[in-house]
Image (tube, rainbow, N blue to C red; front, side, top):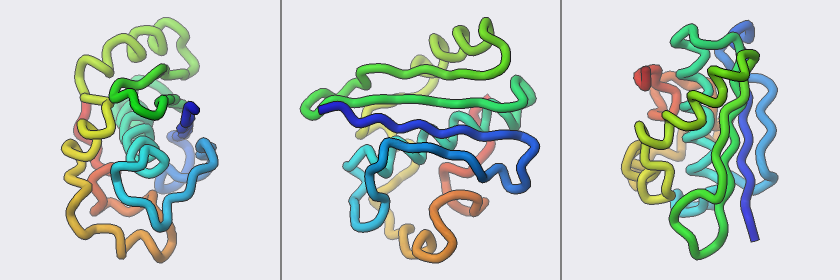
Length: 136
């Protein structure tokens, strides 16, 4: 079984929230070892950083995992510039550990930070670690 997480960030949207499809897994009630939650946070972080760095006007980041395998089965970035998208797809996995444990460690997800996500969602709150703009 593969789990697909897909997030899109557009620079023209206030607070950079809006169109963000994901694989359908639930965020509520899941601990950070479940990639429905942690991978969605990482894809948000990557897409937001691509747009915030001025490299693209919009970005879609996709990642998929298989149960029992630590490394993602696939990862890609899509944006308006196909060459840039290919370059980012190759470069980003060398910059960030995209394994579930790597994501947990990057954002320190075992801390008790989830109560703030119960109101008004998981995205668009600057104090959450996946909302930082510090990748590029």
